[in-house]
Image (cartoon, rainbow, N blue to C red):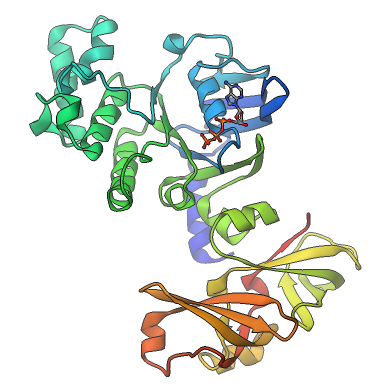
Length: 384
Ligand code: ATP
């Protein structure tokens, strides 16, 4: 395991210690609508102070799961515990959490201050305390100068801040956020991702966020639950999901990936040798779980782990895995370029190269023959 990965794991271990009980426990929760299993037997533990994302494509059940946490839907079976208390049957207003809706759901006739104060007033908080809390929230999300404006006099990003301030005003233990940045354009979304993480860290509130955007989940989350067809496919830190996907689904969902099918030949000292037709040679992968010879497996290699042999001839000579092919496509993305290379078998492989590096050298051209390599510990082995 790399040092950096170790640090991520250690940082997260401080949240997920045995004495740190989960703040949310989802136990075997299923929700059906007619014969559709929107959520299918999901169990998850979420710890205090986490920024936890429910990530998946359209219709995977993430919103239904969030709505069950909020109390807007009741599970068909299973239980939800918050802080050790079974809240499965509790109405939304009796749960120690708050929700920020994708539409923001601001009251159009109220100004920003009154929108933020609304829940506090309903709760019976005194006027003095209310104004103090509203001031604190306006400052937190930096919209003091818009306090007297109505929602229609604000930009999308400003409305998003008001909705966040309103959701945080009651100091909930847990904030549920449904696609919180979905209505913002790409640039504003990227800036706001960091602000949201800063606010969450400052307040120490547990955030549970629904998103379909893998980059957003990777940037913001302490952990991600990756969902597909109502089921959890993998729960882990962004780095581990990226570096060690547990299935072809996880590997394909997050980032670019090369997948090679093959059969196990042998396993020796933690290195598995695999016969692979597409590469025309055997592939070696570091893998500690025991495997049986002849077993069908998939090797997953990220494009940035594949290197040009001419860039690092010494490393290449020691590398376990080599490929030769012809460049068929080049996509320039500013900081990196993506190259599509066809192997003799017809299999297409992607690799990326930093443009800093390629500027210093002869640029690679279409139809050029290239030698590529990667190390046995730079890929993962998937058993489906
Ligand atoms: P999206 O990103 O598109 O919002 P999602 O992952 O949030 O998708 P859900 O809204 O949770 O998905 O829906 C999961 C499945 O349950 C879908 O097949 C959806 O059609 C179905 N579903 C959700 N709500 C209802 C409902 N009230 N009645 C019938 N089917 C529903």
